[in-house]
Image (tube, rainbow, N blue to C red; front, side, top):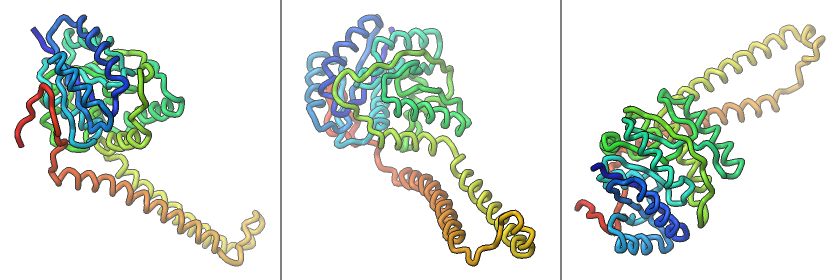
Length: 320
């Protein structure tokens, strides 16, 4: 009989956990197979860990990890993948915006032979600005990377154990899991679902965290931003050359230019200031792009562990 692992990253989710337990247990009853739920407490500051430990004592299939501090959503999911023992692994957030009832549909596709099944958001009940930014990001990323990135698909997905083994072996630290599952290859498909509102509590994925995740997605899977710096430099050089030619002709053919309203001014201070600011802005953009890549190289070469576990319940972490 196959075994299903469900990974649930948690951060300050005390308000929603009772509903999560009830709905996941109800959904699991329809799977008709062995399962485990791995909850990873990403350094919560509320009663999340106490509630998770109590759930493990009540039902040993709920296994839990607690980080020593907040390491981030993608790291929490990565830890869950590391400790998962199932033949198929499902990733789902604790806020219940991704319905546990949809897991059965993911399992159907897996049993048909697909090794990566991601859930595509048909409708989402988020603020309009967030919907617009998410819509734009997925389409931008799709065009920036050579990989067939799935549109409107978040972390809610199912991965076969073969895919999990490959992802666990990847050494990179700035992990954009939605890109990594695509990079791995294997047979992939999707199912559509309606994304609900958060069941309880307040959103933990702030605009800053979402923006950082978007940067990880773009800079981890595309070198197009580096080429953008080259294109900007080339465009500025062309503009500067054309400006120089125009200024030279304006001086030499002053009378002809005056007929069209291009009379040379007594001085070019505004033009000089604009040129300096424009060139300075382009240079800073290029330096920023280079800095993003260099910063990621710096993070990779330090070789620190991705996470530090403070406590566990139902899971025996390996000794360091």
